[in-house]
Image 1 (cartoon, helix red, strand yellow):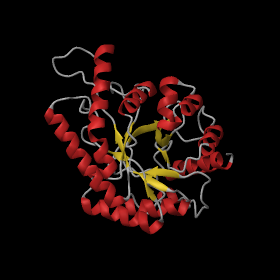
Image 2 (tube, helix red, strand yellow):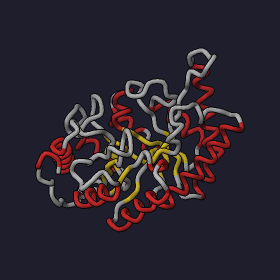
Image 3 (cartoon, one colour):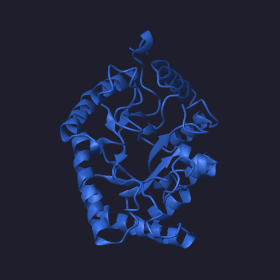
Image 4 (tube, one colour):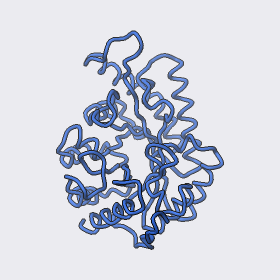
Length: 298
């Protein structure tokens, strides 16, 4: 245990079903790398089960060897945890892949989906995060409103083309708006962008990944926006703002937000998608204390 700190110990289950990540910026830096026995995903899963978490998120699942994916699946089943979202295109998330109409791009998207379905089957997952970049592409001008609209329509068409196959594989393609303040230059940067795509596809296997911090950062008034698009939401991600920080350490009223989520009958995971305030066991323990305080106030 880093710094000689005591373990947080065994805790009862939370009111809500939270998931912690196995690596936000890379697979070597899971959320509780200091507090668990090691950064190994199986040790992380054991620690999360001990703390009362309901699942895990793993952006880099598809970059792990098949044998490691299988180990994760076995550990999740053993501890009764659920696999949350993972990145459908981990090596192409910032390329303008989804918005392209050429056969090579469409073939790559189809291969990515098949690989995602296989990874989901190994781990019990089903939520595939879909993010895309706009460029600028070599030799092209900077994006404008007309070009962005065309690219959003192109993304919707590519998602529509793959939606039936995703459904057959038991998966949901999740469109995530990512605030430009966090990652500049992505095509889907606002809730309106994401809803335009999801509603154009109009398929149960294409839904919205509602990241509370991204929406608050881009547009504010996150709670009424969540209510207005609830029927489009497949999965929730959470971080406090400004920045991306521990729940309960920023400006958002988390008990109010989570009460609304519970009132909607949401039974899915709430993925904690941020890093601790510092790279230490104490910061990880503080994150847990804050999360428990928020959860207890619902």
